[in-house]
Amino acid sequence: MDVSTAAVVLISLVFSVGAQAPVLSMEPRVSSVRQGESISFRCRVAGGEQPVQLEWRKAHNQPLADNVKIGPDHSVMTVAGAQPGNQGQYRCVASNPAGRTTVSAVLNEHHMLGEIPLDAACCQDRTELGAVLSVLSDRLEVHQDLGETRIKQGHPPTVTLTRAGTLRVRVGEPVSIECRATGRPRPSLKWKRQGSTLDLATKATDDVNTIEWTAVRPEDSEEVTAIQGHTVTMECQATGSPTPLIAWSKLRAPLPWRHAVSGGVLTLTDVGRQDSGQYICNATNAHGYSEAYVQMEVETPPYATCLPDQLRLRVGDPLRLQCLAHGSPPVSFRWSRVGGSPVLAPSAETTVDGQLLIARVKATDGGTYKCVASNHVGSGEAMAKVVVVKSEFRHRSGR
Image (cartoon, rainbow, N blue to C red):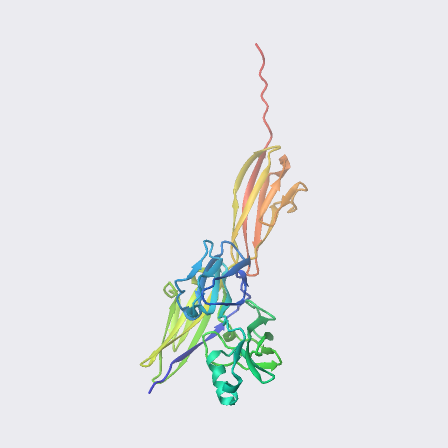
């Protein structure tokens, strides 16, 4: 008896907050190409902490065909001399130290059938006409005019989403996304979760199909965001006959040493930034295997440093201090003085990237300066000591 194996990941997250990740757009999102022609898709990075690394993949981890070329900066994917096997969904995956974002593009095969006259005598029987249509294409319409039957080329669907891209929502919040499509014949719309064959419950009206969540749960997402030092649990449930065996692994790295697996539940304690990555649940029995994936990003408070941390200047010299911070973006900076009044001198300027500038220092500008770097997780601080000395003038007497 052929029994399939299916796995699903249920994620339980302790004290999660919204993730920061690269912001992407795809041009075009959906396109059609004739056999032998070429087409390009551009993955644009609109925001996010640098550097951002781009990678192109085909859906379901299928390898890219030999005629699919990636540009030098990995932002452009070109299908050269399209073949039937090139159609499908492609993904641009952007990664930076703060997380990972995916945007998809769909390539359809364009049928060049034009208008094909048919002998009216051959197609008086509806069954025969139906057979002709099923052989040619499902993107056709039949028109009858003065006894002549013609087949007219249709148009492939064009799909738009009211909220495209990656959505950041809090657990418990309601979410709805509208999918609109145009084409000839009128397209039918279905929502599916990537990697699943199950149809999702949606609301359809005319050319709009809406998927709704009255309250978002952690398991509704394929991404998990955790805060450094907290505990994360991921539960993998699998069905099949015989009962599948469940194993956890991490993509391109071993599981963190602070982990435990029990009954399909993976527990990670005291997570750190190095624990970010893709985790894989593999369910296996005698009839096959199934995998489920979850991407975890660990957010950290800033770790701040000052360059230089000690500086000796003469009166009139320029002062420039740089505050650097490593942590989940966005990071903001605030400078102050330590000891006495924390207010900076009127001549001092600060920049959004963490610099403290004074064009010409005075003797009173000496002292200790503090930079506080903050993000939504926490803050970190660093100190810099500035010594200002008076200019020395030496008088030499003539002989």
